[in-house]
Image 1 (cartoon, rainbow, N blue to C red):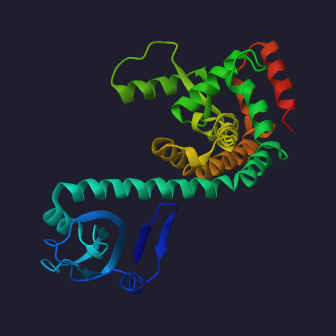
Image 2: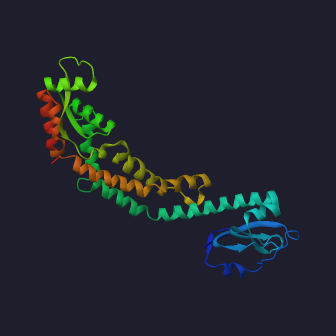
Image 3: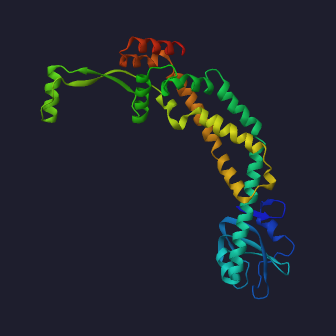
Length: 302
């Protein structure tokens, strides 16, 4: 059961239908020919059907509106009943009522969220600044995905390929044996050029999902959550337009998921950024200077 009354100042949630019946001026037998609609003041939804309050209808329905007439009488009518007996005016009023209720609900939601901003800021800070937190993950992972940040270009390209393909297997090419070349020819049914090369697995990297674009902790925590929280803190919710409220409420609905995604990325990042997990990448390097540079990077992790 859900009953909502819209007043000038706020939305009132009514617990029982008896409270509606007891309102001054309420009637469950209103003649629509004798009264002119003034406004829609509430809406309701029930599991059990409720009889329409119009004397010419009385059709049971689960959902409807509470209306007031220009004479001051109130009753409940279903949406279809309202259209039938009051026409365009009812359609316009019902649309405006729903918009007004949505606006007030969004304003309430945003104020409730606003009161949590300090807690949210602390949560963001905890994920960022904690031991091997998001800031550490972002700083230590950049050399793996950005050129000229400390890791050899071959490493950056290979990590990029693994992320793009969703693979975790690190391979290096080697010349195939005669038996392997013969087996490939038998499999394909055509002659394979000599020398023939195959990819040899040299290791597997776990938790590369920490580097996926959708798990970019700086994007999530700093550029999105932190920046938007600061922006919201400076806004006057009471003067926001319908559109502004809708936009901000939609964003607040994504916050918990983003926090969880950032936390998951940090946990994956801690397991990704270890010498043991990443050392297999050194097998793809041939230049001693690159091997040394990658070794220096690995030494910063543990």
